[in-house]
Image (cartoon, rainbow over all chains, first blue to last red; front, side, top):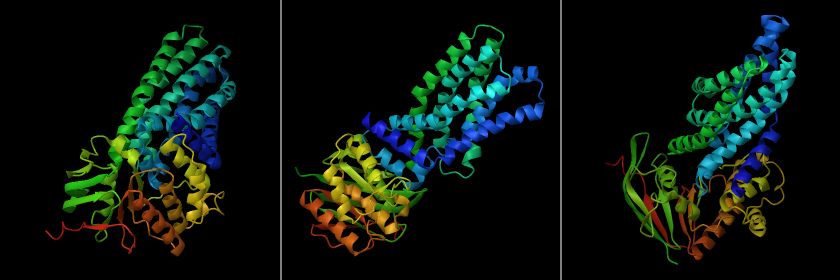
Length: 221
Length: 212
């Protein structure tokens, strides 16, 4: 546990000291969402209908921006080798890196999303559902993204490549989240979609670190 | 306790190309193995294999008669590997770099004295609170080597540790190597420079693929 915390602490310090990267993701999210009212017109009822989908699609795209960097600098400077040369399970260190990615990307997006929801005239009953789906969905993106980040290590255009690999895989998150948000707007039951999001989070937190670690081991071999 | 580190019948390949074959080595506690060969003759790859980061194409490496690739996490406990890449985070200070490394490899055992001492040996004390991005390449090498003192490992694997070192750095490294040998540690080192240590040195030539 001490080693896990040491890694998380180091990565948080590194993000804090190069804070630009984290801000860029957040600003991209805000700007992307802002473009929609300009693009599809300011009709409040139409915006309300699309609000959940707009926010979630922009959140997915923003999360992709910083995903390819999760392991890149550690790979470049040899830290990844040193991370493997410990008796501590690489899977847990990977989990730590995904957690930091979520904390610096998914979590800020989650925090700002209600503000953007107001701008899109989201139904007041849907706010809590938006936050719940964000809370369950964004960590899953970071976990699945870890696998993609390991796969594209060392390749050119890794940023584009990772989007091509990961975006199709996280379609279920988008479908269930948007379904839950629009259902809550119409006063319908949302528990099944939320449960499925929870299940996705649990499954990916078990399997993704394992797959990521296996990929990284193969890569350094 | 006497340790024995040996490899038999090793073949080193990279990207499907043979770099060295029929490699045999045997080092006892207190000994040093110097890898000797031209650039691109498989020295770094062999060191990565010894560290357990890569698997040999064929052949085996043993620590006291146990194949190291059978129980890697036990092997990782006993080695320090300093490769070409220095694994330094440029946005952390020198001290933070070492502390992180200490924590990740040793958990809670924060031997403060050791950390300060390692900085002293490599002349990094005065700048220890400045970010590592201000270090020159020689100083980065020193910071990477300072890790050798922070983990009580019995096997050191060093990939060209002398590159970029000044006279004082070289002296520091020599002191460390001699102390390590005296304590019964084993060193495997790839280097093109002459390193005068006081322990028994074996030499392994690594460029025998091309010579047929």
